Length: 200
Image 1: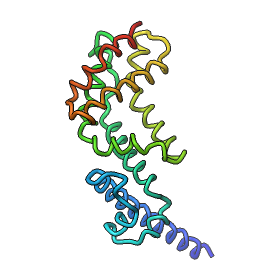
Image 2: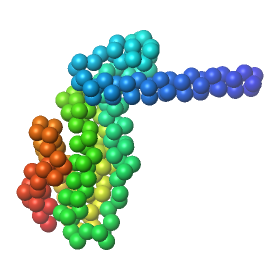
Image 3: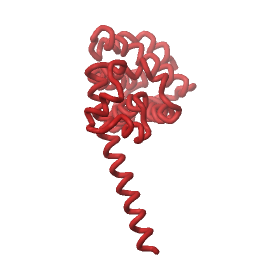
Image 4: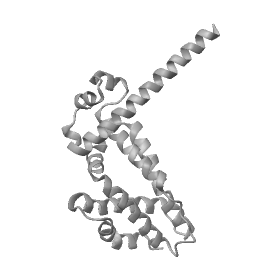
């Protein structure tokens, strides 16, 4: 009896592992197609064909096209999070100097991803609650060094300031999306508003 149960568990594990590998492949293909052709121009059938499976097999993985876009954004965000360095108070004399340096680094990374970021901004409102909550959790991780810096330098209303800074970040990022601006230009566009936001 125990031997049969072990075999069943092993088979389930292998099936789950295979499904995860297939999902990773499908997300990778969706990433490339969305980036090259745009979200609206790509369908599940095309993604499935590239993956060598049927559209029904894609849906059996528990995702639709909107979920695939969210999954692509999640991977990009996680790669950014993995590169984040924690706030080091020995390197910065005040919060504005850190925040500007931090946002500049984010701009430099995000500008390489404008094609997908643009699609995420346009269609993110369609994401399920599951993916929305995962992406919000990632945002909190991205904002943590800023929150730590504001805490260190004695600011109040830290959560509100962080959300305001992030909103400004995307105002600046529009320059990259719309005008092919570089990271410094994106940052320069929001510096006056950042100064107001970071008044102690």
